[in-house]
Length: 437
Image 1 (cartoon, rainbow, N blue to C red):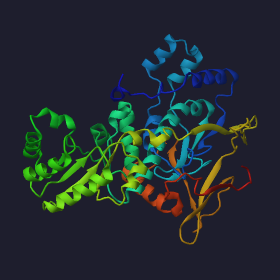
Image 2: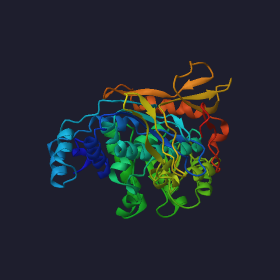
Image 3: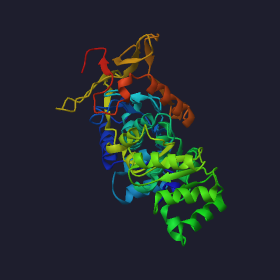
Image 4: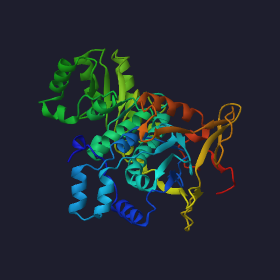
């Protein structure tokens, strides 16, 4: 079954979520009120900040988390759970509340990115689908943010579809757009999310024709002189001369996809200018990452096309997020804090709030996390948790344009050293008001 045919997300989960539910129904604890929290114990090694992405997709996945006849029959045939659990699941829908960091927001270790409130039965079932979306999309957005910062205002084009799973490619394009990428090559991402798409031709188009002249002439005749011609199939210098000869000085762009891009970009820029094509742009591709983009800062490059490194998180393909129970109802109906204490995997119990402390210049200084009453908002502390879902209904604004603007503002709020590409520690510290680690 493909994603386009998927009407329920209920089986996008792990087997043990259902066996826990079965045992909790048996013990009578399934309907206890609970609070689960998503956080990262640490950022990927050397990273200075992370970026929240996938929230809009996540909320839609929660809304579609229903066990219809097909899902129930599959669980029955495979003997995953018993009849009592199947009966419970047949009428299941999430009716709880979800809050969290807004999509596009920067985050740090221990930031409570998502807070899920509901019964144990309804909240535990969501663990896998929530983490699979947030871990993937946040990893991509975190890498994309480093790339768009390194690009210094020059457009970045997402073109990694052929280097990942077909549906991960769509999600990656969405996450990259939130973090500042200008366009995507993926048409499904354009259809599903309204992201601008772009693309012209590959080396195969040039090789299809008898020679480069015939290929360029065909492309210009079909797409017009504003097209982008790929000039490194054979000899770059000869191709640039030919491109301007055929398209004229109004040629839109040339693309370089191999070789020493810094040297080639300078040589091609000088050649284009000498030919009178002073407005023709230079687009570079070829296994770029944030470090390669930064190395081209002084080159006469107008746009970057990024593929493999982007869709694999530039070395960090997951954000390392976990989903932990932090509070649950006791026998008297009160919520009590609970926490995991195992070595190296300690969690902090309690229903938390989160603020970002700002200095008088509006620059972030620390992540402040606490339990209990939230301090009054003031110019020094910016609240981070927003309401996303209430009683099972989406209440957040999930528009991509909003998340894109939010990320730009959140990144601009970080200290300048956050934007360094050298390995470093999280750029601001996380402080627990009650002194817990």
